[in-house]
Length: 143
Image (cartoon, rainbow, N blue to C red):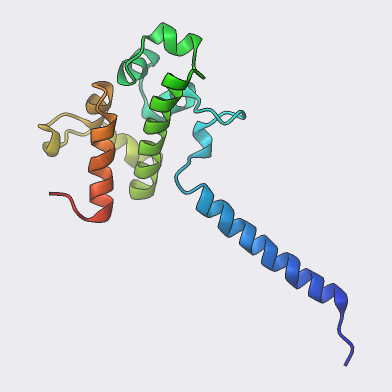
């Protein structure tokens, strides 16, 4: 029986494609590509839009002035804080799914934070606290 070399090559390409899809999914698990510009930096405008807040509130959340945020969006200090918020949005997307559900959750009072909404917590600069809260829920270890 003669083997068809084209079929073997197709099989290899198919396995490589499958593997590249799995690798891509694994690598991008904690990244929302919609929040990043072509240069890889977190785009504060896209993030602001997904959060449904104005630039001044986003700047306050990351401990910067609105002017500094707008003039230096790629500065390391700004990007470090924007990456935290982008990760928070990834967690919410994994846990809630739709943008509508995320928006509702962000704007609903949370009894674990004395009735503050998650957006209020974010704009107070308590991004790390909220991230830990969501990670605990994800792990099933919320106390």
